[in-house]
Amino acid sequence: MIGVFDSGLGGLSVLAAIARALPRADLAYYADTAHVPYGSKPDDFIRERVLTIGRHLAALNCKVIVVACNTATAAAVDALRQALPHIPVVGVEPGIKPAAAASRSRHIAVLATESTARSERLAKLIHTHATSVKVQVEPCPGWATRVESLQLDGAEFAAEVAAKVSPLLLAGADQLVLGCTHYSFLSPLLQPLVDGRAELVDVADAVARQVLRLSGAHAEGHATLKLFASAHPERLHAALPRLGLHWLAERANSAMLHHA
Ligand code: DGL
Image 1 (tube, rainbow, N blue to C red):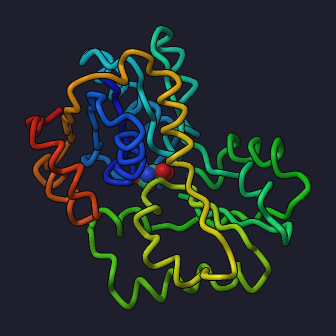
Image 2: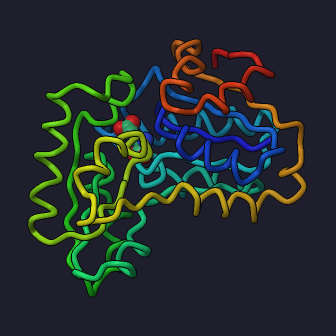
Image 3: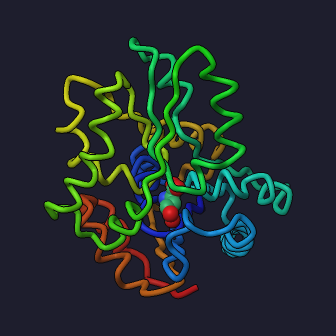
């Protein structure tokens, strides 16, 4: 089994890419809905949650663990690898490298949680892969919570998103890195704003390819999906069709919902 987790619904964008890349794998998804959002919380708190969930997935016999959250990766992927030395752990980091490589204006922007935006790991990633381009990092407080509420079509929120993105485009950014897995679900709002002027950069498919490389025989299973949530597990299953993931909801029908 391959275990995937996030603070809430955001990691479902990564889970969907993994399920497409490994259609027969047995998958487990854990949403830490009792503690979402992570992005406004201190590193120590996030690290403790990541270790608890990682151990839980290891106890379920997961052979690969995917931290489907930029915030949790920045704060705690090293600690998780140390705690579980025999299990490959795949983290998710903002696509700075592909964005820098693709940028023609030599100006990229990163949308992320407050925690990721101020993290040392993001600073290092920029230093390693994007020294020759201008990088604008924009914290987006409240956006992940908005995705959790599944209310993505309000005019007020659309205006908030436009107010964040328009100045970046006006300043010349031609790559908009989605540095939080929740923001994949904001593509319907973001795409019309950037159309023709910038590209959205999402690493979900690249992460899925990495999982495929590491999973070996565990790519072949019975195509089951187990859903776990630390609060309101029934909402997790119900959220799948609301996020355009009907096909994943069908896969989850073969499994039960679990509290964890
Ligand atoms: N989905 C997460 C990320 O990729 C975290 C969102 C949150 O809980 O603040 O950063």
